[in-house]
Image (cartoon, rainbow, N blue to C red; front, side, top):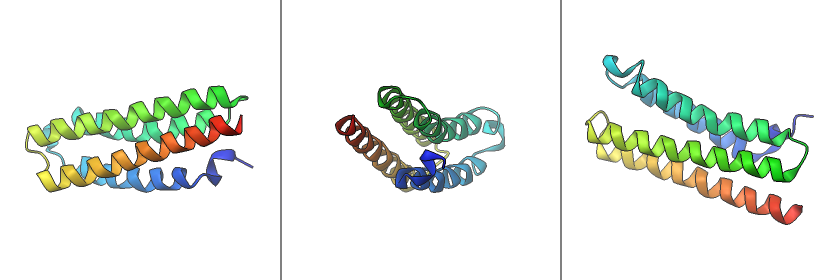
Length: 119
């Protein structure tokens, strides 16, 4: 069985990515190949690193990939800040996505902590 499919955080991130894609699709046309693309890739990277890390042979390696996922989630927040500064998103949309991003980061850190204690 594929290990990462059993993680509740995995399903949460999948939903988050769908929302990010909708947001990215609503950015101005001139940003579709720049900022929107970067936003989609950063969000997708959260999930891909979680999946890749879960298939590693050691929890230490998996831990490293979780930290990369956290970095990608932080990158999403930075891109959202840029979108806010350029007035591509409203302050309320920005705040909503930042809170979701922070929730995912906290959950990833919690997952990491549980993994460390399991080792």
